[in-house]
Length: 186
Image (tube, rainbow, N blue to C red; front, side, top):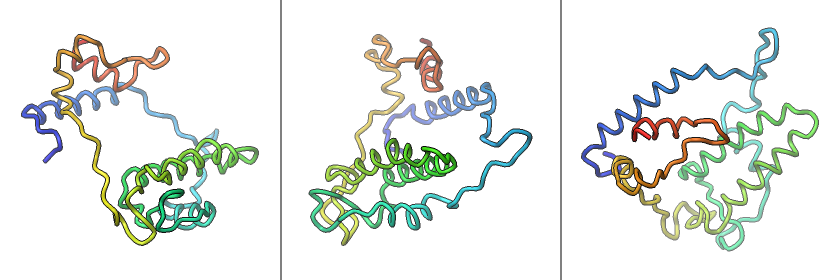
């Protein structure tokens, strides 16, 4: 059962998935990062983000954390936080990429990826807000953001009259923009 209580949800979901499949089939396959002449891309240092967080990030990014989450919030059960797991996976992928740059790659990774992401994750109002080093959601629990049904939003007069979705990013149509344009006839 979905969080969207809309009767037309199943039809909408099928339409969305069909359009996404259609758009992805129409786009050329992404090019790999392998070297010239059929060279294989380098193997990652860590097989996944969990191993990376455990064996590289946590020991390297040392911070004081305790029961008082007024400065740095942290949850040892970070795997139960979708925002944290998604962020850590993105950080790991970026780290695997930048570690190969022998010049400024890791510096760029710290500046553009690690520090901004960890600042947000460990913010006292962030995803670990109700956690402490003693337990997961020990002081309450964050709730998902409230959402309206996508079908209801797409068919609402406010959406269709206002042109609420931009279909271009720097002059190039995006998948989401094309999807909304096709679904709404705009």
